[in-house]
Image (cartoon, rainbow, N blue to C red; front, side, top):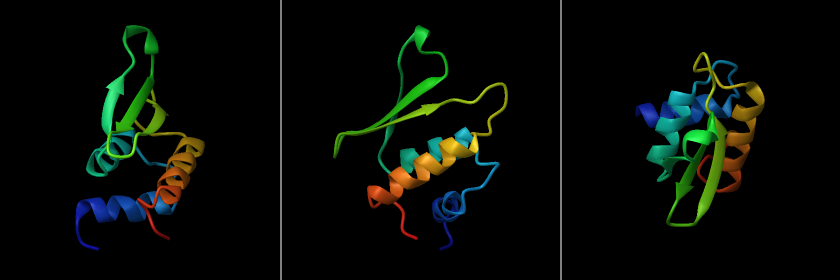
Length: 88
């Protein structure tokens, strides 16, 4: 596994405490998800939609920093495992 996306997949599998929103966005974009902000009132809530299977993932964009909380990382990891986008 040499590509940067493969490294991101391995990284999220380990449930890191310093996984960033930018890393999640990059991984999801690579997996076919498109980022959609829900308008000015959405605050930090961002939807990622994948048209090919209609899958929707909602993430909270962290602020003031970029690191996601551990629960969000674990939820995202588990969702991607269930969808077959990650393999342990």
